[in-house]
Structures are given as structure tokens and as C-alpha cells.
Image 1 (cartoon, rainbow, N blue to C red):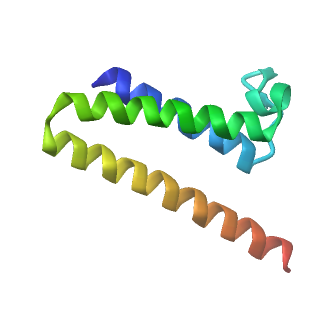
Image 2 (cartoon, rainbow, N blue to C red; image 1 turned 60 degrees about the vertical axis):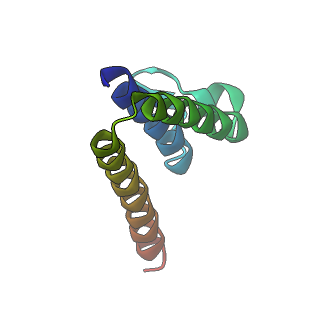
Image 3 (cartoon, rainbow, N blue to C red; image 1 turned 30 degrees about the horizontal axis):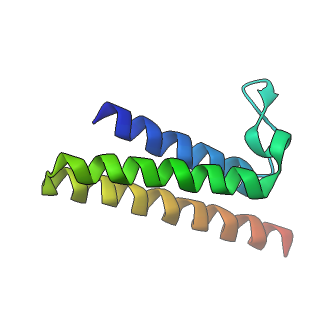
Length: 91
């Protein structure tokens, strides 16, 4: 379960760096900074897919629902962040 959570976190960081246009992460080039946004998004999607496969293999509905809710909250948070950024630019 910890591995799945870590994969979800990694996928969210890959996507977040693209959304934030961050070329670095913790002082090093980010994936999108090194390979471009397209590669970073594909990498994030791949990591998310791997986490989903591992989650399905657990065959534990409560855990699946809980982590599904985590993913839902991550995505909603990113959407809110993008909308807030867009609203600030419109001022």
C-alpha cells in the first residue's frame, strides 16, 4: 500500500511540475525541464497507471475507494489552482 501511495505522489509531482511550469524540483532539473512537458505528462500517466494496476491487485474495495478519493482530491485541487492562477492573471 505504501508503494501505491508513493507512486500516486510521484505521478502528482510529475503533472504538477508541468502545470506550474517548474523546470526544477529540489534543485535538480524536473522531468519536464529535461525532457519536455509531453514526456513528463506521459511519465505521470504511466506511473498513475502502474499504481492503478497495483491497487486493483490488492482486491480491497475500501482501500480502492479511499485512494480513488485521494486521486479525486488531487485533481480537483490542481483544477482550483489553475483557475485561481487564471483569475489572478485576469486582474
